[in-house]
Image (tube, rainbow, N blue to C red; front, side, top):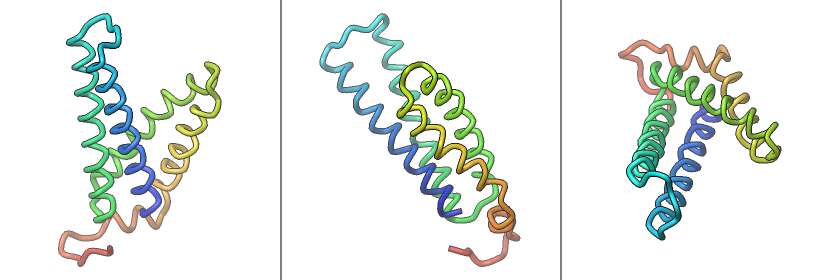
Length: 126
């Protein structure tokens, strides 16, 4: 569970860095087709980063529901990582694919499922 939480937290941090860079480009007057479309994209980056931080936090706490959120995030990462890798950016693609595959495999590990399936009254494991 710790490894999955770290992977998700690192992905959230990467999204925050991308949002900061995107916002700074927007503020410095980089050309965009639609200003409000760019603002919407920035909002999506920030919202997805906040969601991933919440998923990572509740994974560490041992809740059941973040496993689904982490799986969805990893599947999104795979859909971006494969075209990135085959589109001429193999290192960036691998940097997305390898942690996503690791997290997906670990999400279905028996120990992770057991950790996240504790009864409501059980004391926290972490």
